[in-house]
Length: 279
Image 1 (spheres, helix red, strand yellow):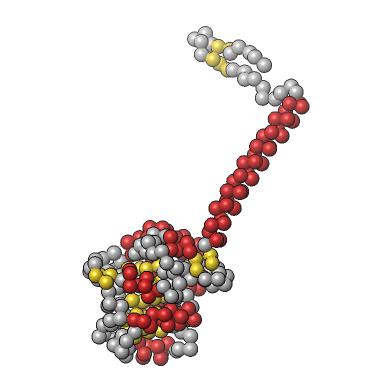
Image 2 (image 1 turned 90 degrees about the horizontal axis):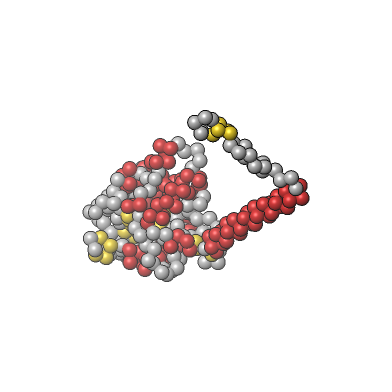
C-alpha cells in the first residue's frame, strides 16, 4: 500500500501510513514463516553444538586413571583466584555478601606455578616444592626445621586423611632427625593426642586436612610463626571427579583456613609473607 504523507500547513508530517506487513498472499506468508523458523533452528543447534564443544575439554582434563585435574596446572595466579572465588560462591550459597568477601583469596596470595610442565602427582611433589620454595631469591632448605616446636615452614593441605598420608609418605625425603614431616589429620588420631604431639615436635613440613589444621591452630598447638607457604593438593580428584575445591565439606574449611586473619594478613608481603601454591 502506498499513500502520501498528510502534512500540516508548515510542512510537518501529521501522520504516515506505513505499508502493511501482512502480505495479501497467504502462501508467501507461510513460506517466509517456515524459513524464519528454520533459521532460528539452525542458530539454536549451532549454539548447542558450541556449548557441547566447549564442555569436552573440561571433562577431558579429568583423568580418573591418574586422579588428576589437568586444568589446575594451566591456571596462573589470576585465573586461580577467580576459579576459587567462583567455587566459593557456588558451594557457599547460604553465605552473605560480607561472608563471601571475607573468604576471598586475593591474586597476590597465590604463587604462579603454571610454568610447571610435569604431572602434578605424588612422585613429582618433592621436585615441585624444591622449585617453587624460594625466599629472597634463594632456594629454601626444605629439610630444615625451626627449633620452635610445632612451627613448620610449609603446610600441605589435602582433602582427606588417606590422601594426606600418601602426601606425607612422599615428602619423607625431606625428613631427618631434626625435622619431621608431620601427619596432621583426624583418621585414627584424637585431637588431644595430636595437640600433645605437635607441641613437642620439631617439624619442617606439616601435612593435614583443613578441619584438623584449623583445630590445631585454634588450640595454639600449631604455630604459623615460621610459615612461608601453604601447598593445596588441588589437582588430585577422586573417582567422582571431585577435588578439594569441588566438595562443600572440604572447600569451606579450606577457605576458612586460608582466610584466617593471622594468615591472610601476610599475603603479598615481602619478608614474612605466606604464599599459596596450588599443586
